[in-house]
Length: 429
Ligand code: S3P
Image (cartoon, rainbow, N blue to C red; front, side):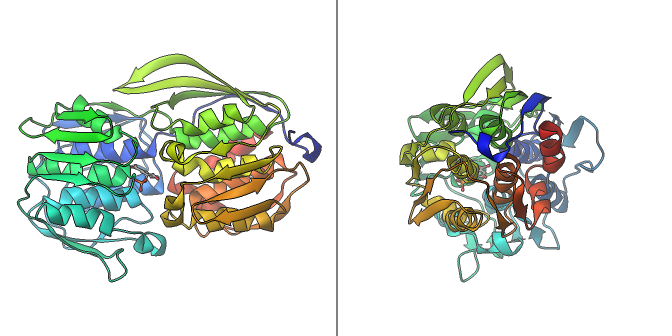
């Protein structure tokens, strides 16, 4: 079944989605900590990345204004010991990556800082980084609920071997960055492999980082070199437009220069499994990250089972995949995704409540959801809870299901994807 009955648009053309959010955060942080100056090409100019830039500026790093639309942003590194205490609290906005990765850096910086964030980020769990960083010798004081504000007293740290309970690239990266700044050995064992951008980017800058299965270790002693970053298009952002093309009434959409790091591409595999056609061409390497042109066309979509082992590779894409499932024949089931409950919103409840609100048969599971697809017209008001991925997923679903879905807070897309709505209008015109 496709959404033909409900006036899905045709798609055509070639687009470029904005730069990868995870890589953009890391490019700024590693540029700040390096000796010398680093050029970042294609950085994502979204609210989350601006939060990282603002926090680093408050710590004494000179970072150009991201509003100035130049292709290359140049950051003068201050070196691993070069950050300076900020008189103000460090505002991470809506960005979990800013808060958790900076916690690792600040735990090893010899001064006291306080991380704050917006209402959504303040509720998100910080003990998962506070506990391992305490084991390394820093003092971290999250709020009574375990979130922000979190005060960090940086110290001389010792190395650690940490067995993480959560498959989280942010936790892994916080520990690796603490090890990097303190120049001590760290070893992280993950329950499942998560995105490995930190490891790749550290290696590209001369740091000895070793991966064996789900264990990652950083060997101290090497200088952190300044390096250029060519930020690929964000596969998470590309998923919205791949899903749109998959559900469209015909045509082909090409997405240029998309990151296809295998730790990030689970959603593309799921779209293929559901019946869409995805072709990868023009393979290239962007500073240690694989990129390709992705060409997507629609298919007869059927339901799928998303298994727990796939979840880390598509965690941020589950709201969009749930909306694709709403237009696919049969029952789609996702389990092993309890982490969705502690994202920018409780994404299990937000996805299911909003699907039901627009007329889709869906139900919550403790660690996932079930969606039963149909091709009937959908309509209703979506409550985003300020969550960018809820807004964009339902924006795409609206575009393919008759346009009757209204998103209450479309502007929150700027957290990860400035220009999303304009691009959506452009490709469905
Ligand atoms: C991210 C890791 C993931 C992801 C988030 C970005 C990163 O979070 O959901 O959007 O850049 O490391 P977790 O590490 O909490 O799984």
